Image 1 (tube, one colour):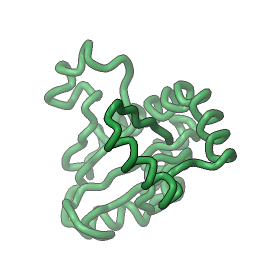
Image 2: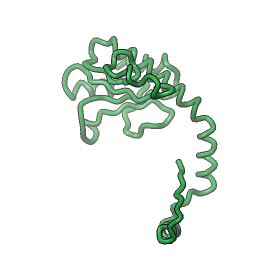
Image 3: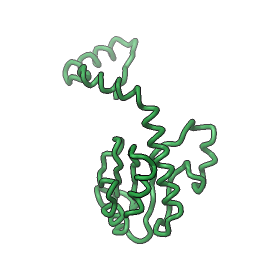
Length: 160
């Protein structure tokens, strides 16, 4: 992504100009082209991502081996009604806690075929992470539904 810093303070401008020159904090032409191209399709990609997340959340809400599903846009979430009017559309991040121990969360993540075990969320592919087994944190799992369509996303979860 990109951004801008705007100032009317001479000292701040001098410091930023120095840092820009010293560390090369300027994207190259290809980087700018890729950001511009990506921005043009961002709404369509986010719509697909949100639809897939909703399908995965629906699947998880009715699954007997899921202790708790955490998707604020799902009707089963205690605060779903508070999002009304605040967000134009749902987003795609889904969390869930598998029944059992941290080892159960790892088995779920390792048992998927569509969701690759990875921490780099935000791409177009479906990924899943288990922070407690990968780096730190709680024992929940976090699937990132990609753009394959809702049916493959749910089928990927069912395989696990």
